[in-house]
Image (tube, rainbow, N blue to C red; front, side, top):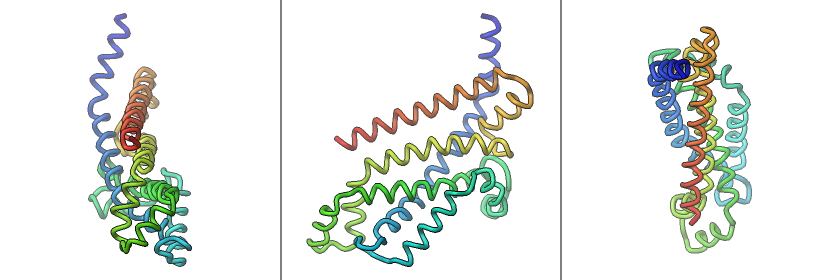
Length: 222
């Protein structure tokens, strides 16, 4: 019992700052990736041939860009964008610097999920709006986004869960957060209790995100 209390006290002492750093990274990257990835996904969907705004060449370029970015392993991507991180936030490594590669990694993921959500919409809904004289902007904001919102929320939930995993990997190369705690104290410091505690906290965060995402999705469906 004393040993368990000692482990809990150690975790309570070590955990707050890395946990706050992880939440900071994931929250910021989620916001930026949703703001940038959502319009990218919508444009990719509606620019397909036979859709409401067909632009074949643009669609090919966007699909190529999304596929290339998604295919890069996150660790390699994080190292590759060190110069961009330095340019945007003034540092190559650190918690704030890690937001840059996290966002870049998440944008194509969000874009593809949003694209699929838009494609799943019944064409009759869009066709009806077109027949009533709605323009592209009106259809996007008054038809596509409201109708696809439950599916988009489900996709954002998946994105947040992926970002939690990416943020843990970022800790391996100076990104801070729970990943850094697990590496420095758990792995390199041979403190298995810290490593185990970090894994448990990450699992709890993922479960909480999934629970909240499911609740919001069901409410939107109703």
